Length: 79
Image 1 (cartoon, rainbow, N blue to C red):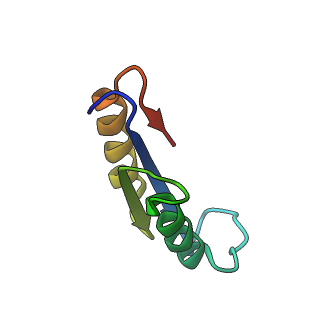
Image 2: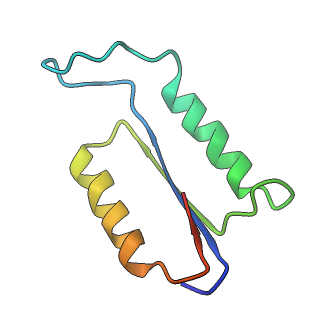
């Protein structure tokens, strides 16, 4: 990754395991997609890379997060 670049990982989950005691959110997938669009917009967010995970297993999200952290360098913004 180059110095000063911006990277983000967004998670939008509306499906949970049966044993998890979370109340359903109203529109997490649409919210994550909308935020990704704003972050990618060159006039607003100016993020170079936005990864969006919609109803994905935590193992995929964790792997992407770890990869992003390992690849990040001083001066980059990571969300």
